[in-house]
Structure formats: structure tokens, C-alpha cells
Length: 357
Image (tube, rainbow, N blue to C red; front, side):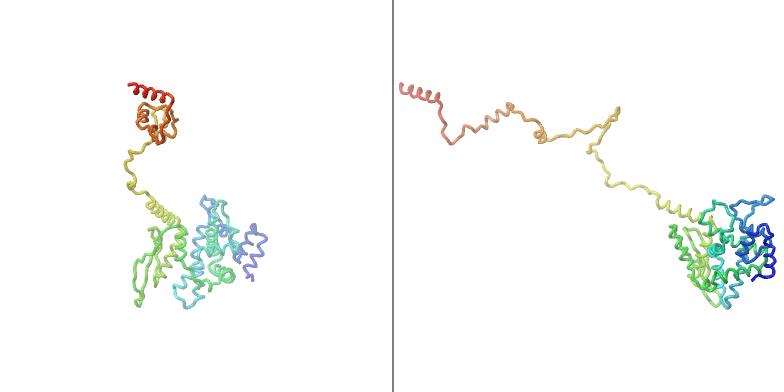
């Protein structure tokens, strides 16, 4: 239902120069802007490189800073009233979930704020959620300057918590920041550990633990809790926040990772090869100095190979003939030798000659 102020602003709407922007902002916030400059600045991303008459940059970073502080106060007030009797740790955790950058980015998209943000086309797509969350905070800052704290409270209660977020569901939803940090480290192949800095007592000897997340030797955030698990969760949460908001912290982590992997992969002094020894007996291929042609080693052929490949000769040497004569067994036989005609005549003559004597 429109209140008296909004009725007057709605009547004035057709006469405004930027009535489309006024209508869009009313759909988002439920309020008609009084000073449109605040809202235009809240929707101006720094990539536009806009400047005022004095040459100073005009963007939503200052309003984002203000809106972040106002959101903490407004949401803290709402959580405090909604959960009477709850401890400070529970209230802080619930507020942190409600004002988390991821939550604000999703809210901005649901409400259509992302369609109103003015930014250059070279902004990388994976930064959009970060940009939209910043714009949401800047818009809260604009509402605070234009309408005051109560208007911000109304905006969060009526437009956010009644329609878009179940505060009870958010409060009791367990978010394991330690698992999220470990998962990020595993995906990026960086080493991470939690270091117990100190253990003290508080009140009636209740133990208090302080743990610190250390990534690749780079010190992260410190968490303080009544159990080690709680302190590690808080340290992981703040370290994740630093990884998202502090580019120099990420650069330092990956620089440390680079140094570690470089040391692991750098070659050490080469050990001598046990198989390497003098190989003078191996014939190597030499090249002539003038032509560089390869000189192939002469292959020594065995006598067996020569006899197999060389043509056979029927002519025998004198030594071979002498050996053949000495070893000739052709005159040795078991059968009587047949006499020739000349032998018979010679034998007859010899017999006749011996008879005459």
C-alpha cells in the first residue's frame, strides 16, 4: 500500500525527465527516489570511468562503503529483535550469512538490480556476482542518504526478508567454511593447514582457542572460538573473505606456490650412470673431416662365409695334389686287378727269357 509520501511521488512521476529510472527503482526498492543523483551514482560501476565537473571519478565505491556499514547495522538490528535470548556468536554468524557477498549478488539478480548497473563491456563475466553485490550495498547507501535509516529498515524488512529470504532458514543453515576453503585449495593445488596459536581460559575457566589458516606458508585470518572446530571455522571464513576481496593476498599465495613447485621440479646434481664405462672395444662411426661422409667399419668375414660365397675353383695347388697322392687309396681293393694286353705280353716275354737261361 502506498503511503502519503509515495502517492505524491507517483503523481509527480509523469513530469520527471527520467521517469523510466524512477519507475524501475520503485519496483526494486518500493520507494520513489527524491534525489535521483544518489541512485545513479550507486548504479555506476568504476569501469565507466565517469567524471564530474571537477574531473573527479564518479562511481559507486563510496556508496558501497556506506551501504556496507548501514547493512550491518540494519541486519544486526533485525537479527537481534528476531532471535531474543540467542548468544552473540549465533547473532554474528546469522548476520554474516545475510550480508555475505554471494547472498547480496543473488538478491541483486532476483530484484533486477543487475539490469540497472551501468558498466563497460570489458568487465569479465565471472566478476558479475561481485559487481552486483557491490551495487546492492551502494543502493542501500543511496537509500540511507536519500531517505534515512528507517527507509533502509523498511526496505530490508518488506522487500527482502518478507519475500526473498527466510531468516530462520538462513540462521540454522550450517555453512562449513573450512570445507569450502579446503575445496578451493584442492582445486588450485595449494597447501593449507590450521595452526593453533594459543589456548587461554575465559570466565569460569572456559577454554578459548585461537587458530590461524596458513596457505602455502602465507598467514591467513585468525579465528577465535570456544572449540578448535569453531575457531577453525571462523579462521576459514575470514580467509575466504580475504581471498575474495584482497587480490594481493591471492597473488602472495600463488607466488609462494610457484616458489615451492619450482624447488620441487628443479633438477638436482646428476648422479653418475652405473652403466657408463669405457667402451673402446665398440667400433664407432667416424666422419671424414673434409666431406663429413660416414666411414663404415669393415666387416670381417669368417672363412665359412668366404667358402659359401666365393666361386669354387677346380684347379688344385701343388700342396693339395701332394696330399692327394699320399692319401690316394684307389689302388687298394679286394678284387684282383684286370691285366691289360701289354701286361700279358710283358709277362710272357719275361717267362720265356727266364726259361732260356
